[in-house]
Image 1 (cartoon, rainbow over the protein chains, first blue to last red):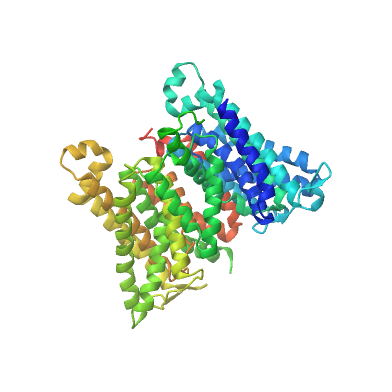
Image 2 (tube, chains in turn green, brown):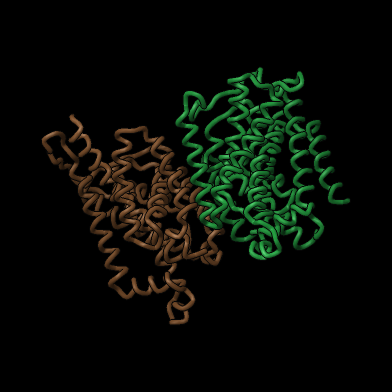
Length: 310
Length: 292
């Protein structure tokens, strides 16, 4: 009960934030929530199932380009475009998973990395359609939802919040369900769960596909809410970022991805005001986390003080 | 030019790529073979070699050859020392856990690249070749320095091979590669072997960076492509085996030269990365089989 109350309280707090924050920070918060959706999907694969992927940028890119291009080429409205993007992320994840899940550990990391690199290069290769490195802006017609213009502040923030809330509550329900326990079983001891009658390949493929749906939704939402689709979102950097968010906030905690995304966003915001080499701090954070706090903030809090944290 | 000389030129360019790639990839292969660590920062060490070569060339007066000779000694040593420090400060504390070290070396990659951006700047800078000498073939002239690179790489790799197979230090390294626990119980200081191996691997990457910099300018992002190609070489060649790495480097270097001259380079890269993924999926025993 108090678990659901905590999550609903976060959503309520985010809702009231729009009345307190300046428009600039409100837009940033919308961006953080979209990135947090991406990170929540990554968390389901990495934090709960133990699948350390280095190729999630491919899934984000799939959602982003599927939504952006279908809005651009076929004039799809925002609602259907979001659906197309989400499904594209899930389909891509399932396709990659069918091959990549034959491997594990380091091989899995490199295979996903290579697939993501191939996807990024494919976007560059079809530059006449995709805009290549420069990308393209999504036309205003594709950015309306039920009569609201998503390019304006309030509808944009509320759409991001709605998507984030759905993503958060679904992931909470998921990890508390029997299926969620199976995911953790895969992470903790795959051989034992196989002996208990589970099919590790099928469970991991399902986890990766759900993760892909999240990534696809985040990519599509980014394209539709912020109006820009670019190849930079398919680069390795966007595979690293969700991993960083999850590691920082706490892998295997439902609120960790949002916390990590918000803190990292703030850190990069401050750092990029000081230096052009702000990615230095991303690297520093990665090394420091893996060395000193492999469980992340919420993971440590859960271990020490608040045992009931999901 | 007709097709024949054109192909010859492509092959010669490919041979230079292959030579540099063989150096960089053998470092990566060595580190994975002995330590089971996938060093994502390997490309950053290569880049550091190139940038340090530029820095040394700025500070050493006199003819280009002397500056270059200084760079070829200083840069690998500095990078090797940095790698040894990294090993002691980060990798050892992670107990060489394969997944944690990948995350840590990704962080290291960002830190090295961004520190270079701060200190060195976003521009690409050239370093003068140690000698200006051209070979005049009937169809085209060719830079003598590029042939020197191929020759130098051969000498270094032969030395490396002799070091690993013919010296006591090499024997200790191979023993650690086969079984680190048994090696330790025989009194081998495994920590020192790991530190040395990591430094040696990084030094080889830096050496490759120094050799390439008179051909290709030094830039803070130049490590990315080399890292990717080294990965491809190491995976196709099969890990732990230096011979496999060398053969793969030659094949891939030559293919790269020919393909990028006749076809779209992006398409070639897409096919190469997909090929690597497929090799890992369907023939993992060639690479990570021993571990799993």
